[in-house]
Length: 516
Image (tube, rainbow, N blue to C red):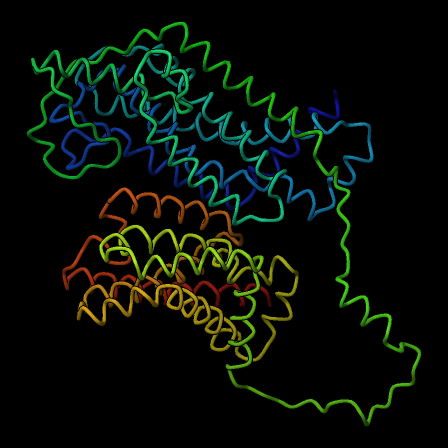
């Protein structure tokens, strides 16, 4: 048992001391600051028709708990879904399993370390919500219970289940990170659109926020004096905040079945871990040579004398094309070959479905499928410990970095080629420019975040958030022109791309200086 707690402790410390965690924590604080808008702000986060709640303790507690449950579940998976992989890469797993620790104890320790990492962020956001109450409230009294209650029953159980899903996906799809990313993306989307009809069905809501939203809608119906279904908006809704009416929300009394369901969701997660522990490889991961490679090794005459005169003479080549070719091949061969079948299907859909649907939904999803390829575009040297060799090459900025970025752009443009051709046929130059600039933007963003965090987690988290927001029609994060058709938008996107180019090369140049 002592080893069990030490495993949790050191795994937690290792994760929280990483740059990716610190950057995510800072980003979470910045976003949490916007969960409850400032009284004169031009946006709202939870809005029912033209009504928002009075700024009392209950509104602050429940709104921030709901937003944290959704937001942190959204990014939490990508923050913690590599615990087992890190133990494989660092050989820590083999050391742990040289002891008497069981599969269940190890996997459950990973769940708890995932949970504590997310709980750390929740604790900071919880304190931020209290600070916001004292900054924005309209003179109402402070009630700590109105903060503790929603966070305990809504946020904490949902994050525990996300921690479980991260471990389950690693055990089942450990070698296929792209499957983990995409599967969670669709699972999250399904859970978000689930609409309970009865009190018993609210127990099936993993995020636990549907019952609160339902009570808010009922209160608005009473205030407005109508029985019609009210339009609900959760997220960042811009404009029309000055005309919003107020209603008094004092929290809700959760039914017993809902409280029990939150405990059952956590118990269900533990049962899943117990089940998959029977199929865990216990770090008995053997690297097998392929049949072709074995035959080559067997047929080769290792003990034969080597004639230096017969060896190919080295030729100096300062061209960028060999490096560009290598980077393109690395991107293409990054994942399993059968995954390209999904990409081909996506390209076919860009050709067949209506233009608007292809641009607004098909393109961002197809590009998101390349998240594992783009996330280590400029960090694979560090991961494979070849960065000293690469950084010492001839003109690492103008040749190596430029080739990596150009290869990524070429991949994204190739995948979006059907949509680009349709833009040309329809003489839609605004959409054409937006798609091209969007491909450049997302590759540069992956490069910038990779160099900044020296890893891929930060980009994976942010790319997921951007893609999910675009699918839900949030224009603020539209980077490929799916929802905006003005020439001024193209100009803004061009300025942003130029800024990112300068930032990427500046950060890599400083990185090179620090290596010397």
